Length: 213
Image (tube, rainbow, N blue to C red; front, side, top):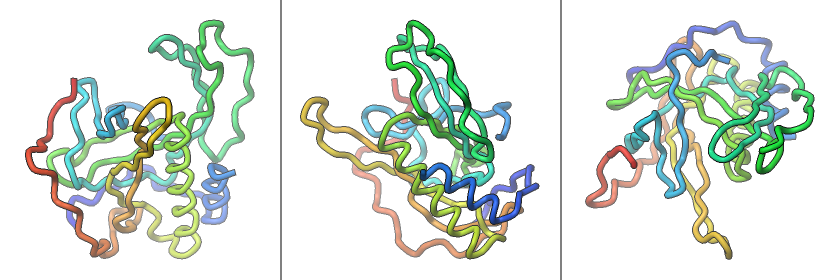
């Protein structure tokens, strides 16, 4: 695979500390030049202010030292408060939630990733989630990195494709869940193993990359 990302901050802690910290998600980098990546309500991965749809089958590198967790308080479409820390630190202490917060403080997980293929190669993105499905997916990803760190500490960068799952909610209809499909593992300096052989399914007829309104 070409265009493998090389993370600038490769000063990793010991694999034992890394594995333990990643495991905390189951029980950063700075934001300069970083775009917001998210999955919209229709199940499409999009990024940036223009809500550009992620290129199908693009491969993204997960920075293993960028996982964060903490709390966020949302008002009417705006963030009223946010307390996020690296998973190498304890969860932040909470004070009283902002008065207009609709759900009070919500537990939030996040991480940094970079696109390594296609027309979006080089894009640095931040993914944050408070949804049950989103947090579960990040827990699973963090757990996989922790296991990999023990098995092969030289290759702990998960190379993934972004996908979705869905289920039918009796009140809200179809609910989509963000997924991270593992392709291969890479080192912090860009060396990678052979990708998984499973070929992605072809894009549905008529589906084109677009900016989502």
